[in-house]
Image 1 (cartoon, rainbow, N blue to C red):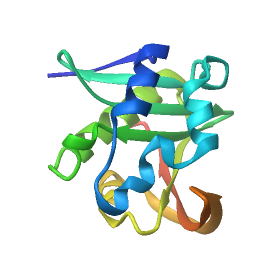
Image 2 (image 1 turned 45 degrees about the horizontal axis):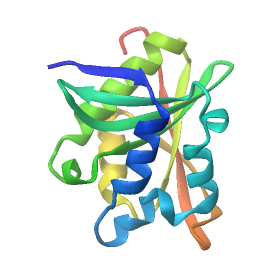
Image 3 (image 1 turned 30 degrees about the vertical axis):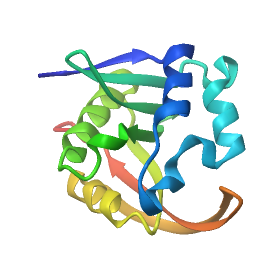
Amino acid sequence: MNYIFNKMTQEQAESIALNWHYDGEYSFYDLAADEEDLAEFLSPQERGDKYYIVNKGNEVIGFYNFNHKGYSVDIGLGMKPELTGKGLGLDFLQAGLDFAISTYNPNEITLSVATFNERAIKVYKKAGFESVSTFMQDTNGSRFEFVKMRYECTESS
C-alpha cells in the first residue's frame, strides 16, 4: 500500500499536538515539550506549505516538514507514537525521501536528530544518510546535542 502525502490541515496539526505522546526518553519529541516548536506547528502562517500529513490507506501514520532551500531540502518528521519501534521507520523514511526528491529535485536532503536517539540514527544510516557534524541546540528547556545528517540524491535514488 502506498503512502499518501497531503498538506497538513489545522485540525490535523491540533490533533497531533494534543494527542501524540511518546514514551520514556522519546517524550522529548512531544510537540508540547518545546513552546517554539509547538507555536510553529500550530500556526498556519508558520507551518505554511512545508508540512504534510502522511497516510497509509485511511490511517494517518506520520507527518513531514520539508524546508526547501536551493538544491537542498531539510526534513523533519514524526511517526505516530504507537507505530514507533515496530520496524516501520525505514519504509516511512524512504517514502519521505521519494516524495522530497520527486517534488523538489534536490541534490541533497539533510536532517538533524538528537544524538540520544540511536534508534532513529540507525534507520537514517540504513537509508543512506551520513553524519556530517554535531552541534548543541537549546530546546525543550535545556541544551541538547544533535547530529546533522546528509543524504546525497543520485539519479538512481
